[in-house]
Length: 87
Image (cartoon, rainbow, N blue to C red; front, top):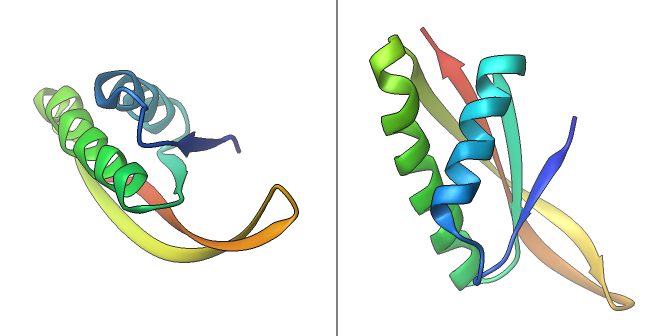
């Protein structure tokens, strides 16, 4: 499964479209964010995606988790958000 890597400059509407597409195809989407700005964009994207799939009777559930990530040779702690559909 593809992990959507989110930055503080990511467009929430674009991420939301990707989330909605993955949830429709695989019933699940995963995002990874490092930093407060990136996490903010990820949460906005989930809220927008929820509006995209709600008319079809799909509700989204988020499962947050920590992720250890290496960035430029340095270990960082990020947040992984798993988004699943609940009908």
